[in-house]
Image (cartoon, rainbow, N blue to C red; front, side):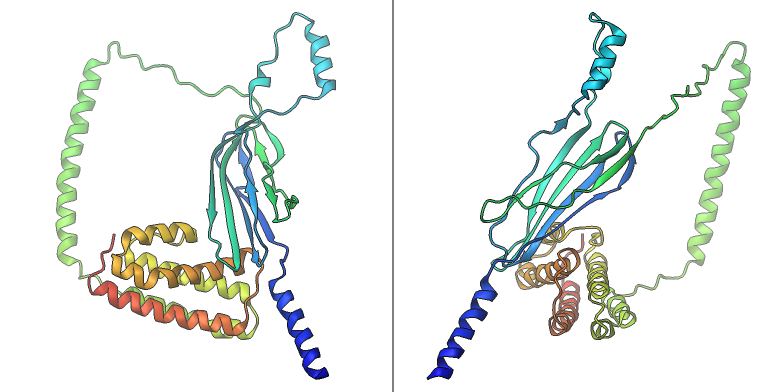
Amino acid sequence: MLLCAVAFVLWLCAAYKATAAEPPKIKAVVKPDKATVGSILDYRVNVAGMNIGTIEIVPPEKRECYPEPKKEEQAKKKSDRGEDAEEDPAHYVPLYIIHSVKKDDRSDKSMTDITVSMQLSFYRPGTWALPDIEIRGADGIAIGYKVPTVEILAVNEKGEYQEIEPPLSLGGNYWRLAFLAMGLIALGVAAFFAYRYIRRVWEERRAAPIVIPPIETFMSDLEKFNGDRLIDEGKIEEFVFGISMIFRKFLSSQFGFDATDMTTYEIERKIMKVFPRSLYDRHAGDIVQGLNLWDLSKFAEFTPSGDMLRASLAKTIELAKNLSGEADDGAPRV
């Protein structure tokens, strides 16, 4: 009886630990971290974790930010210019302008994965912190994170005059221009016939291109990648980055769109348009599930077990073979 009671208490503790909320992993990055005035910056904040409860993310409301001038600078400028002097026009230049904000929520019942993407430009040289995005947990308490900084350089830092060429004077040059025009026409005609001749010779000598099926390239890349060895050696980050890129390259070759530079959300939206309904219903869930697992391992510092990664590797190989066979049977390539 005592042993049953102890076992029940241990079971309750394990259940509580499994369901207890964990602190989220927050990663904020900006690309590039060094740019010139007016350049477009890509600022992303990712919140991810298992069993972390409800997360509220509130992007900045102000799309234009003007820095507050220091009191010492205001007093100095006022004394230098006098009471009736006009206000410095530089005060009307914003520190930054937010062009767009997008929230991508890929969460499910047990896993939270939310990314806020923001495009903005800075208009004052210096080193500046990116806008702070408000993040609150289920208890309503704000969650802090390390806000990245960006270095903004002036486009013409020394204020030098740019070279401006004077307009071309055409007086007395009409015959010269006429001969030049005729020479250009003759050169263009000669270049046209030369191009046709070279193209004809090249087409006659060109051999039929060797088309390698995407699934063969995929399997060859996997063999070089040697994912099982990376899992055995505990190189989890190297594994998830590698398998994610190999599978994205396969999707790109098989279906005719560049998945290597897309987020999981963008890939999901793309295959919704590219895949036939039957192909999407059978395989879209497996594609997104695999990509979400790799994203969580890359960006949320979540470390899956070796068995989970081996299962993901085997499922990815099977998925690629199925996609290759069904696409060859009539799936459109866009």
